Image 1 (cartoon, rainbow, N blue to C red):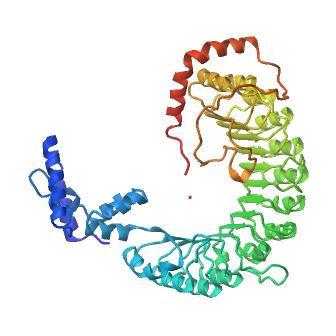
Image 2: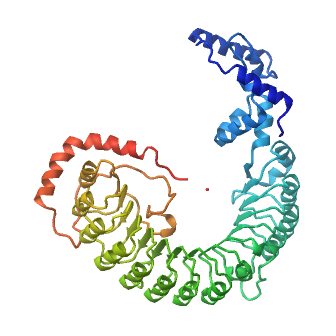
Length: 545
């Protein structure tokens, strides 16, 4: 929308009316409200903006150029935008023309409404089509009609659109060649549809595929890729595919690929990872979760010298040897997540190799791994930039290990401890250590009491302490229980009371008499003030797709 002469005149009018007017009385405001109400009641088709023409009621909103009004709308939530669109015809038009993101219930009945929807929302570039699994979804006709109405589409998300076929996807991609991001889950089209995407969308940068039912299992599966999109692909994510390896040609051909995520895809991935690492040398981020991959695959990944982020989640065939190889070659590693599934195949040896060779590590998440004080000391001294640490389900992490972390991890800012044999004595050590610590999260550590958490808050007023002893057991790295990842989910910031204290084996001694005395002195006196401070400190914390 270009700025018209009337819009410029409106901006000049705003300039002349920028001086503040005299404040109006409450009676005047009420009178104005009644005037608007009666005006609309008498003429339902009237424009409410026409009301603001009385004395002292200059209509500044009507003088705003469409571009400014659209900019305001873009700052509102989806619900507020919908309400604003009901104010008047102009707002309805501007709101529709300035909306770039749209999410629709993709049931079969949507077909009849597509022309009117996309006549109003004619500037949509990001579209989500989601259908209830128990309902019939849109078919090829609806998708093709959308593609004709949304030629500028750059992002598309398809969820449970089971009636879409290869032919419909192929026709769609012929009309929407500017697609940059595609995410599809629980759909029934197959390899031909995916190849049509890769052959028609030359600018495709991100591809996420989950539970694509139309891909043939076994040796008869049609290979997917590389296509013209191979040159632009930067992010590939494959989830829960029976034959995800048929995407091999696409991955191998993506020379500029930076992020590869493989979740719960069947088959042996070692050989394919060897070929991928040999052909794609720019990988920066690799996620392997519940995958059949061994040290052979890790040794192949070690050839990606620019690797910065590595997630190994429930890959029981990966051992210390594979992790050592990665650490020795990938010296730029910044984030390392390991869920060892309590197999003890990754332990001190692998972690010490990380400490010796990867000084840039900032985030370390260990789930079902049993590090000892020896490896923790090496990590603290070798990874001086370590800011986020999560230890979950580690049987060897007790009070002595927590004291070591408090003494050695100078740069640490966020610490998460879950289902570890630590107690209030370990919390006491945090009071005088980790000078940069801003947040501590403790879950399902039965020997840590609410009194211990309150004492720690009282000792370090700026430290946010979250104690949660009631959450159901869930040690899954993919669920982000660690709390150490950046941009994580909203947390339940409350103190979980406990009636008793379990006797958990730990490497620490009993609580000292002086600590008991301090608890008795501080808990009663500062409990209320600590609680208010805790809520206020967490008031602004939130998570963000």
